[in-house]
Length: 400
Image 1: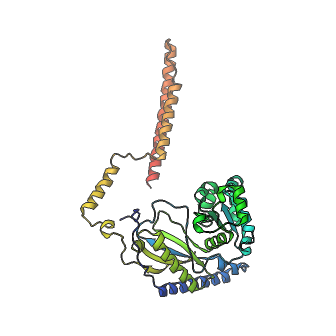
Image 2 (image 1 turned 90 degrees about the vertical axis):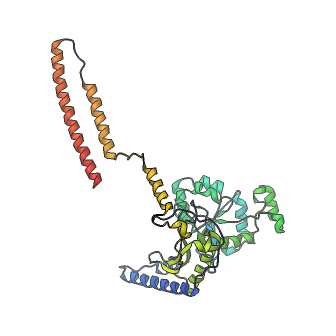
Image 3 (image 1 turned 30 degrees about the vertical axis):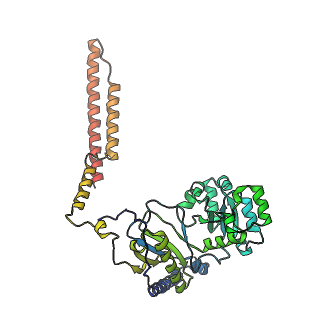
């Protein structure tokens, strides 16, 4: 029976029964194998790899979770975030960040350059651009590719993140490598928070309008950005397999295990409909390694009586009858070769009609016309025979 495309509905979740010991054991085995494979590759290489030290820090470790039913009925371009015990990119000073904000960009540039904003984080934010300037400057494919290659991480205000697929196009959204991560740079209600704006912020709000009225303080923005940079991203699609990057080969086995447990807990509680009941298996893997299992369910189906139909049951018969009725009356599309031969035959017939001479009144002209018609008929017959052979050969080739 084929894989079900049904989407599980949300329901109550239960405690994740994943063994910490098994997760740590799998982490040690995976890292050991990857380090051994890297040494063998370096030894067999003709030239020494000068970037060998940085390669280990960039090699990702993935957690893959398989479910019994699809987690969504449509693809979701806005990724979810999971806070990790050991962040992915938070402390790396070489990681460059592009911050995409709502209008106007000058307000957010001033916030990043202010004294309240952490200096180390401000140096890593190499570009701050609003949606208006983004659409104007990076409209072409070449400009989008240049922007894609200039920064390691892209963050976007959650108020405009759903408008970015049209602005950034396939360059950013074809893969999940650098898809913009949503960040919350504003407060829902400034008065409810009980936080007063500084005199500088009040002046900016008055000059620039209500778009920055509920903007967070510089310190809160910095915390939000750091959390987003170090978080694991969950990209939900119409599938039963979800992969989440939880670390790098330079991490320790303990760090990988702790990040894996945090991600699995978040998947079950926030992202997977019906939680642990819909979870089939969890694995750890590297880019070129086999998947090491750390947990697997004993029940392979979400609803056994609905997902698996017994042989000879009325439900199975009704499903088969429905499939047969759907195929009745449907004509098979003619192969491309048949269509081409048919068009050539029509062209031959049309040419024959054009080339046939009009009947003459005198006897001599009638005899000449009849002789010409005989020649033309012979040519047409010969060409039709040739086309039939081509058609027969094309059918035989397609059947093979």
